[in-house]
View 1 (cartoon, rainbow, N blue to C red):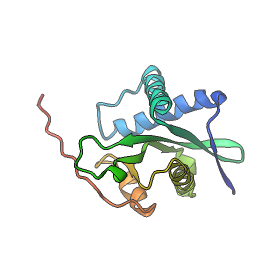
View 2 (cartoon, rainbow, N blue to C red; view 1 turned 135 degrees about the vertical axis):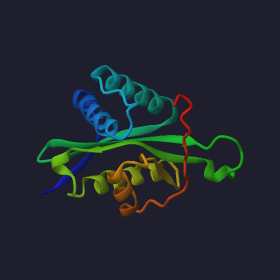
View 3 (cartoon, rainbow, N blue to C red; view 1 turned 30 degrees about the horizontal axis):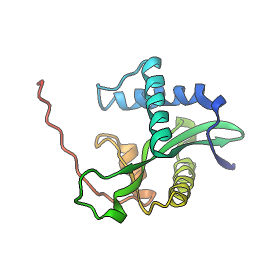
Length: 161
């Protein structure tokens, strides 16, 4: 079984929207604030495509036997404020990473992130960040296994309870 990772093409958009929807449905089980409509998934993808156009980035597709099994979206971002030194302020942000259920555990996330790291380095970046829901055991297991180290803890206070 060979995993091929390539940059997305315009004709990939339909299944990218489907994968975005599947990711939102998966996360909805943990966070009821996720939009689980096809329109919401399309709008989210459009907003990320706009970020890529303005700031730089890419959308990667993972395939097994020429069939899409996952995607990753990477965008150049800049730390706000000036508490981080100038040469460290720009970084690569993995905003979305999804692997189909049947392809999980086969190295797809690793293949996607390794390609993303190469592309971020080619953009002149020397670090990458990814955010996962604290209540998502897949993310909590996957990201450290890919070499990510915990950087921030983000806490939430619901004000509507």
